[in-house]
Amino acid sequence: MNRKEFKAALFDLDGVVFDTEPQYTVFWGGQCRLYYPQEEHLEQRIKGQTLSQIYDMLLPDRPEEQAKVTARLNDFERQMTFDYVAGFVDFVTDLRAHGVKTAIVTSSNQAKMENVYEAHPEVHGLFDAVLTSEDFERSKPDPDCYLKAAERLGATPEECIGFEDSFNGLKSVRAAGMRVVGLATTNSREAIEAYTDLLVDNYEGMDYQSVLDF
Image 1 (cartoon, one colour):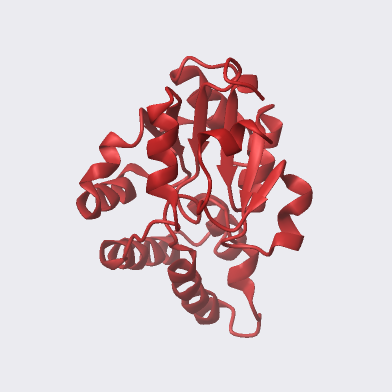
Image 2 (cartoon, helix red, strand yellow):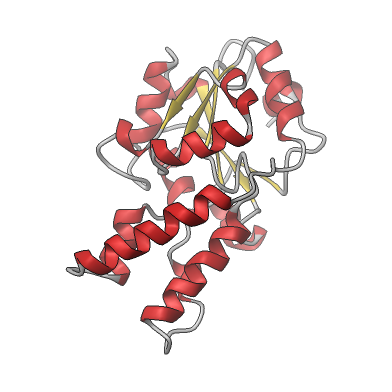
């Protein structure tokens, strides 16, 4: 990739911008044990899925229980801490200084983003666009969300790089025809390596030039 080809960087939210996955593992671990006490590590199998996908798996045709979990999740997210993945702010600031457009592409909803904005008002200045679950019809691993983000930023898929941590997210970026940077914040390096063009633990030491070089 060269300077003329690289116009946009698209970032998932949890595990990519913010290191929130350990908190979600605690929450969903509790819910999984509540409804499926006999199933071990079930929370690991739902990582990267949308809420509707999780409900289809855990609580199909149980709308009352789904509503209870949603209420618990909303309460939990209002109390979450949003710590940036190491090196993220410096990295995205350097990209923007070189004219790269940036966007968040998340399966989280707008209400979740309001919690983010309250904790980090500066997020508004780090991204040119924020796409949430309300902005696309089909969830990851479908490429719909990333294709819409590219269109909003005026870039072709070939001019974009997507940053993801979950299997569904990585597959979504690849299906969109974009270069893929995988972050080993949620799954092991060995587990996600095959889905990435570049594999990193975090953004420390990364800058605009390092992205051009892969």
